[in-house]
Image 1 (cartoon, rainbow, N blue to C red):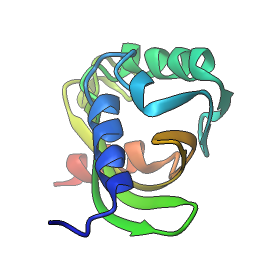
Image 2: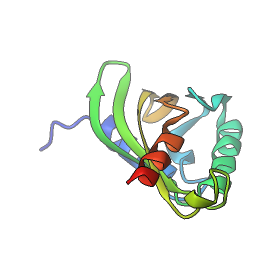
Image 3: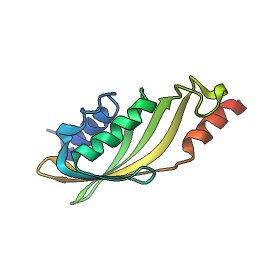
Length: 139
């Protein structure tokens, strides 16, 4: 029998859904009135707003991956580190970057009620994508 917090399992399932390429995949893991606050993308309240924000991102980052790797728990929720990556599909970062994969490290904090996420707060650096691409161009 494992002592692993079941909220960590739910967090992993949610992040797999964020990484699936399917804008509807996260829905089962979020309450209908969930709040997603992304430090770069702003606050989105309720499933419809969250889905719209996520779907817009998937039009740009079709192979988006969010891979969590460390977890901390408290009575209120779970925090995790993650690495986000995707491939530049067009010339939005210059023609030399088209087809290159960038990576960005970040952290999320999730609160839960009745087995679903009610609040997710994502912290990451707006400039990390361009920095990741620049580092590749230097090598």
